[in-house]
Length: 351
Image (cartoon, rainbow, N blue to C red; front, top):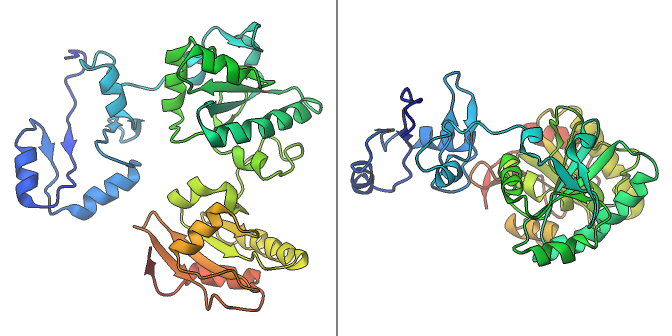
């Protein structure tokens, strides 16, 4: 109903199973539709435009660039399309004029201008959040002793002011006021937050995302002093990468049974291999965790042995994976082994 935008079109990408379903559904739509037989095209579009569920509505500009990936959410808030094409606001346009420096003190948001900003999306009702918050609080206090060019802003997903107050009282860093509901909602959507807790890093001034997953850096006890501001690495511990393995092809080496020296050699080999494998993530699992056990089970690797086991995991390719050699390998896995396997992984298997 927005008369300022009449030069647009909608194209329906169907995931119906039969022609009957498709025609019955499409007959109710006054716009274009991709033919049902173009299944591969719809799958390609779904991947390109980050479809995680349906319905999924994406707004694309005349130049082919994405304007908004959350058209469904925008339409639910603006059913008549008065704000179409729903261009996302910039970070500093979303922020309120003041933020909470602590439970009782408000400070002008303009004081954040020259600082790195970590946004902490969390909630008191979330058990992993309650476990992570003390670790983040400790890291914040340690880091503040070494530098003052950053701030953490807690973005709450709590349901009530009382829940927010009780939870925030345990945090030494700043927060978006609970009353700023629109701000909290827009930040959650802008940064495509899919789960809690999420901690991301923004650069000063223009607030580009430096790293969408700083949580792993803090969670794993990495050196958050020398590594600040946590530019993403192409390698790391599997425990901190559950989101990456779902969205990127990656090599994973399991070596839970190795001794300290063997595990250190493996990490060195994977770091070296990453420089030859542009665009591919590399992860190691050196102790048994929920994540490593889940991946082991999904890829049918069997119980932990004395030697390493390596897979190439390609969940975006409909859950594909590849296994290196034999999972009972007693020898080491070298940099050359990793590179060769990543380039020619062999027979595809299905999760």
